[in-house]
Length: 639
Image 1 (cartoon, one colour):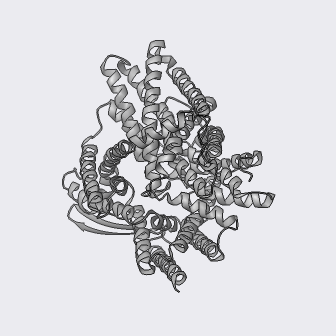
Image 2 (cartoon, rainbow, N blue to C red):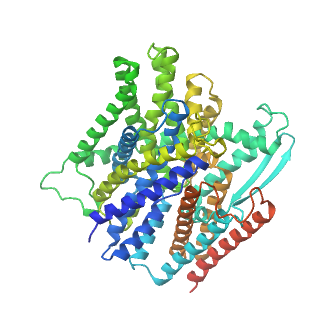
Image 3 (cartoon, rainbow, N blue to C red):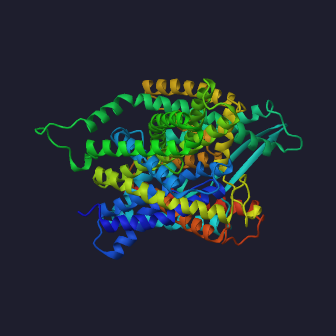
């Protein structure tokens, strides 16, 4: 069947423009992005059906390319920091696009050996990859009418709820209950996201309970205790103080835990990864049986050629960026930056791929891993300054900028790995050819990188960024918040100026070591598992996200017990529909927001109006959705 076609490449590139622009705007406005794999699958399915002659494999390749390009927009987390710090006054097209594309390509290369290891791991459900595969199968008329009906019904319900909450603002998007005791505030928060409910169902009980544990330990124990230790600003309410502690302190416990758990995960995968690399790079004898089409990656020659091109390109860009520091300093900076990009790149690719397999790309704490990478980069250059390199105020200014510039390549690699393994999981389920998917991913990196610089320039010239020098025509009231770039700039400069609090990171590392030992003991005794990474994710993410994922996991476990597994496929189709509906609606609302320059252009409520009534209405709608989800499985499991 047709798979990698020219028309598919063109369609994927056109979809890229919409996804990349909307994600960059949304990321700079509120710090969030929308998942692109599933909307890309639905849109490409509709376009190919209209053109005629499309196949499920061609559809899969289009969504693979478009989702990779849309995911690459995550470099919005680092690039604007260069403008905020005064290194750039605009985003030069060549430097920005080439560095982003080269960084994304390293992510593609890193995920090739990871594919063989992670997709075979039964503990990784890859919820969004499974959902995308179910959509492609349904669109190819290979799905039973009942399953297709469940997919469509779930998608329609999720779209209606998302439009009513995020679009019209008639329904609340979550509910929060707080109990204040002196300086301490105990909090319970639940989000009403249909997509997170469906993702939690696909994640499973162990991952859901681990994230629930992380959220409860943070908000019911750690933050109330810290409230009596951290200096309390006069006049600040206990609830706002708890939120400030989570943002400035407790989240970094999650970062430390994610870091040590990710290192443990990579070490545990060491032997399978080496075996995978050996299988990829050692050419088979002519007499040996060739691998099946569905297990054939890019050839060793192609991989080495692309790797050489990427290394030379990144090294050249680093030299060009460092040229004002002098030839010797530029060479040292370029070599150090290149070594960090390759070493940290493999680590963040493995960590992000594992987390995406565990909880899905949308819920994976990509920013936490990027923070770790920023800290490692800064520590390397702090060590170089300690031996006499890059000395003085000018050297300090240069190293901060260089770390942010190099971090862009690592961010692109992490973002691609965070998404690509979901796409490769989808490809495995629909019997796609891996090497063709890998080519589509590389094309997606190039097409996405070409869109990002002009979008960033338009947004900067139109709105500006909070914390950046104002320019002519900029309205400070309309400036984009750009929370992630501001955070990365603060962390990077804080390390160089010795102003960063390492105690929370150390506490997270210690907690991670204990959880790794506990998880190993549980697995040996056959009493289940407690994935340390999932606990760290529960600490790092907002409680509303972790709680909703846990509700979906508990709902799936309860229905599997009641139906004895008979309604599992139906539940998977409903969960996939919930993810599809919210994702598509989120993309549409993001495009409307970007076009209008307002967060909620369709809101029916005046600004600042809300409160209890929309929250109660949202809670009622979410409970009704859960009941419908359960009844759908019970009804299809009945004899």
